[in-house]
Length: 79
Image (cartoon, rainbow, N blue to C red):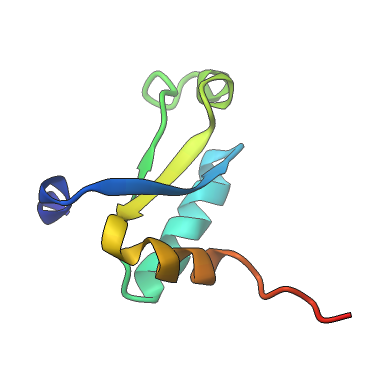
């Protein structure tokens, strides 16, 4: 994912747990969208720190943000 460093990254969604963020990243990767997780959890030893600092943030390239949100957000139910 070194090529992502050259792109502007944007937050598409934040999660309360590492496992939720991992699932989202996997869904994005499965859809052909590169994603990374950003969190301060003291190397995984203190996940509560990540929660206090905004959660486990899933980031994608700016150009992929709309497509990533489509993957992560279920379609609105029609009433």
